Length: 378
Image 1 (cartoon, rainbow, N blue to C red):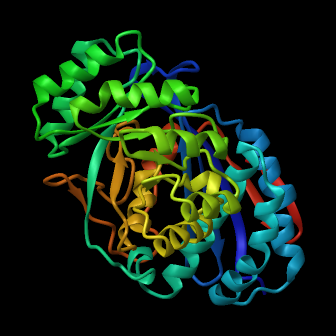
Image 2: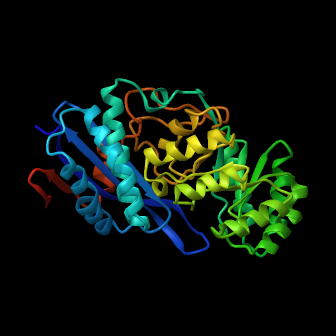
Image 3: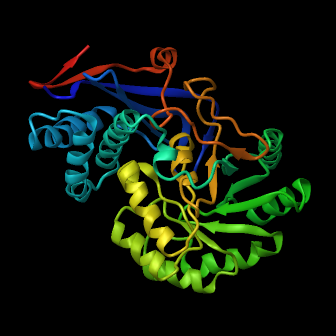
């Protein structure tokens, strides 16, 4: 009998208390997707992904069923236990990752990967953080919003709101016509002890990236993030010419690119994106590469699950922390205390939505049965 008995998929939408605009569009809701893989051993594997970009739920669910789960079940009709499930998944994951290129495809792969890891870790009666080595028991957090749609006063208010939670670091988005004034003012009001970073969202040419680093270096910036598009040659030129340290990785998909970047020291801080990496498996593979070349690792969003991963490594550096989702929607309370976050200690990944949150923010619900392999809309 298959260990997996049923897969429940729930599209979600979380309204923002304060809508904002990034360089692409106005954002009023955070879209998410939750998956629960039920088993015959009283373990439920939870997977949850959300993001700033639009999330085409129907497309992702179709990919999840037709490409990801169908491949998993076609490999072995009988998967007896969690260890065998993980072994089969790790066997097919590289090929699946190589086949997924769009954001929807990568999200489908990642969410199944997270849920399978949750089942496996729960079967081992440990936490994800501890299973991976648990190199650090806490990681410092930095606030990440700083949207271009915010006024200068709003920007200061956000910094102070994070500071009230014990977070003494903040990332400012670049691309405003008054970038220098905004950075200068934040530095002046928040003080020299407050850590500031810059995020360019890939907007600059090589010459512009080098120049903005020069212009803003006097204000003691920790890093300049994503200064240009994913052209490794251009990234190398900016890295060579920039006065500021460079951070990147959220838009990198190919593992070979991560290897090239780390080998050639094209970044000072690596920031893999968990969905684009293909889930926990991909994040681990990228973090192992960074560890080999002694490059610090941060996350890109999804701090709830990334926390356990970043803290598992001795080169885990900081957690990108946001306030995008409603409060009290998880079974674990992801609080920041004195500027640090501690990874969950209970069995599994530690990231589970409450039933109340699922009911409140669900858009619909779907069930996928492994045998026969059909989906029924509830």
